[in-house]
Image 1 (spheres, protein in one colour):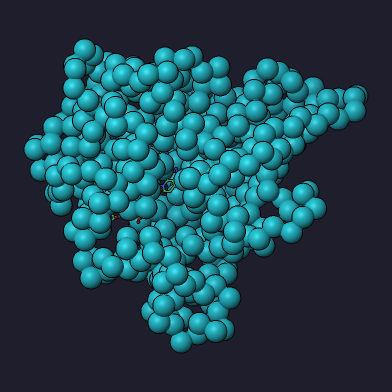
Image 2 (spheres, protein in one colour):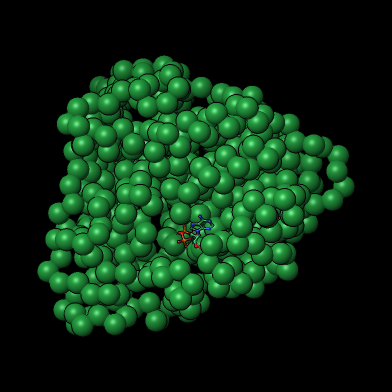
Length: 465
Ligand SMILES: NC(=O)c1ccc[n+]([C@@H]2O[C@H](COP(=O)([O-])OP(=O)(O)OC[C@H]3O[C@@H](n4cnc5c(N)ncnc54)[C@H](O)[C@@H]3O)[C@@H](O)[C@H]2O)c1
């Protein structure tokens, strides 16, 4: 299907239509391309929201500005993305000079709110990477800004768009096991992917809100979408027992570390040209070390996390996140009034094959990974019956195939109705981060946290669109 600017704009409005707040209707009918400005020219900004947009959608959009606090990374980004648009170290200046139709936010998580609020207040629509934000005060600022601006906010929840997640949604929504009553959900990050968070800015609560927010926002969004209700209360435990101060030794960075031969987590960034060009070549501008020591003392996030979540429709969830598992994968089970659904991805014992966890991590992170004709199973076990196995074709690259489907929805098939309701707006973004923020507060206080105490949003028995 030929994509036009009008179709793109309609799609953005439709995506934003999942919000409970008034949505902006874009100015239709302009002849020129959609003007896009991006803030945060790191790995996600330059690849998925940068180069891929130029490569796939240049017929309807053009970059009019790139912004980052790191001057060197900004110049590299311009070349990598393949645009000649102006570069800005100052976001306000970019809005003033570049006059974008849409701002894409791909900065460090704790700074998202600043650009979302400024963009909305300047009368510009905003698309942000997850997590929407990292604490409840920033969440409220975003709610207020969207309400008063009348502009739209889209949250890039790509996990909903993977065929496997979508199949689970389809099975639940069609009443296969009746009404859902409780859920067990456990996510295992391996010693490549899990460890990588502790090397980077993600290891600090004041940058990424901890993995309760940075990572679990994906999982909580899936839960909210599958269960189709809002979270009401969360109680959590968590600790840092493996990485950070617990390590037996530490160095300034992996490259120059004197424990290279001893450390099982040693990561040789010099073998990866893209990471060298993006980060190491630009360390002198901001001091950010991409191959930082995952045993450094300043790390203050949890590496094991466990929560119970009660939903407004009375569904109860047991959730956990592990960051040093020998394999990467997840399991979920839904108990319903008429039976049970069990799903699991990437559990090596299910495949009965040896999987290189390093190769798996590299493939997962690759936006352009080749699609493979693999299937994974979902078990549907109705009460008083034998179980059935539902086979789902799956992809490994680009977050289970979710990345490219999210883009295609926005840019290629905007007017098609989505029976699975996969588009996410501000309310979805906020509800998913509030569970993680509540979990952090629960660990600190030792008490359950009511989601309604955190912002002005009241949990709804049926998820609001
Ligand atoms: N949806 C997904 O699956 C997915 C995957 C990866 C990353 N992300 C999200 O994308 C965002 C970026 O992550 P990343 O891995 O690219 O990180 P990164 O460290 O590679 O990039 C972040 C960039 O933001 C810049 N920056 C930081 N503070 C800034 C400020 N105040 N003003 C302007 N620029 C600033 C940094 O200099 C850096 O270039 C994060 O929010 C992350 O959660 C989402």
